[in-house]
Length: 88
Image (tube, rainbow, N blue to C red; front, top):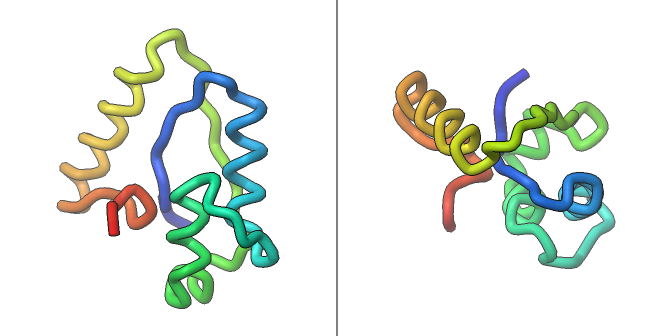
């Protein structure tokens, strides 16, 4: 288990559905960069098979602040951003 991506959504349901679809093996769109990076990484797909991925949601009125704190916390703990947050 591990964190692959930290993000926020303003249209919660639509964006979660789009994220899940973008990571699906048969998807060829680039609607969500996270999904494209996941599909392009054989290492991540082997270590974290699509069938075992899940999304953890946190409801808040301060999405930008929560996302920023989660990213900073991850960076402090691991010395880098989650693999799918990176720009390639």
